[in-house]
Image (cartoon, rainbow, N blue to C red; front, side, top):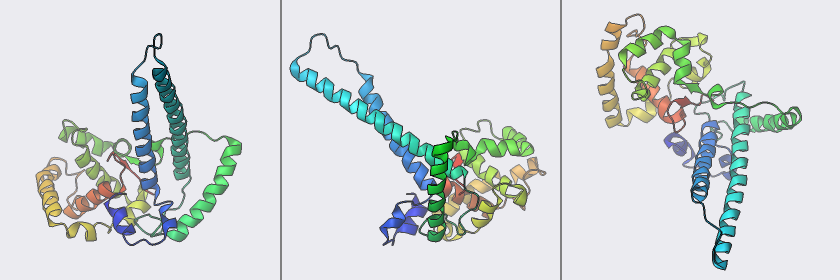
Length: 262
């Protein structure tokens, strides 16, 4: 769980609400488990052993290692299937949870209905053998926002020599840009329901606010003066940057370039 999820579940007394915390948490945990298992599997496969002249106890050690490899291979395949299933579920979400943050403890009735839909969809998918759903298709990525906003993309490319090195800052600016499109953005409902969620969390952390204010002052009004048609002072306010950092901290996967908007 990230900090926001932990704060929401701090006083949770219903263990059933931990079965599914939220889409961001679920896909993050599956990815983490998969990465750990893959690392272990690679470590086992890394060394080859000459079995021409081995002792009996070495033979049993090799059999044990082979058993580990076989078991890990099966578990990794199962985890990857669960990741695939979760991405497919995420792609079928047509209505966002009514209250942010979008967690089962905040929206229990919504997620209970979602589970019923999942069970129905799972049966249908098994019969239809539906295709693969990629992560990029169910999250907000920096590349997506840049492609959707060519004028913004052009300005960013001129302002940042290495976008990858400054990706957190660029992503925050990209989120503000996309939010400014209101109903023209396909993520408008997500933006609207998270609009005021940063205040309680960040205002209490004076050091974080001061650091963000220093960042904001290093960017504006310089960006506005350089590209007035792109970086409107009204849209790119300090409050907007507070919101964008909140989204980055609480709705992203381990890689901040993937924002889960459901």
